[in-house]
Length: 225
Image 1 (cartoon, rainbow, N blue to C red):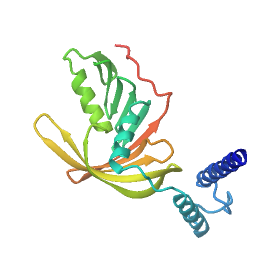
Image 2: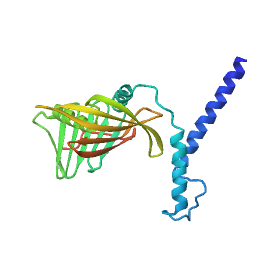
Image 3: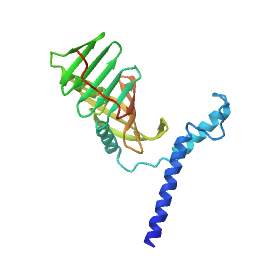
Image 4: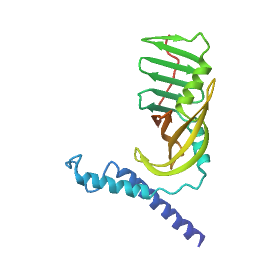
């Protein structure tokens, strides 16, 4: 009986995994929609809506308290090579344990093991003012996870890039040199891996959207200077 039970459970797990994979794939390959279907046609919109509804309905309700999910996601993100892109176009690349590449319009900064390298126009220069620690604090604050979480709340489910997400809201408090600043956050955490994939950060009424990518091929190296 024990062997039959394990066999049955194994078959059921495979069926569930296959179903979730099919739902994910169907975001890009909608059933009943041909390559000649107009991109704004009612048929395509209906198929997309139905597919998303099926996938959303398959996402289980989390059993872990919201505060624990958020804390684990924020801690886990810094164990991966990742890139976070703001809707302003600014980017931060992080390679654990201590490599950061900040890219914004007209300038770049690389910090490795506490030493900063600053690019001005086309020329890199090693920082001589010992700004490395301050820059690391600044950029990790921007990348998220440094805020103190309060009032966490499970807000429901969503899909980001075909991946099922749990969505949470919370208040995040950041300590600056002179003050404590509390802002509202909404975070999308991957159901399958527990990583943050999207954050809506509303600072003083101004929203900032952050999108996270995890890629082992992201590298941060000392520039030629």
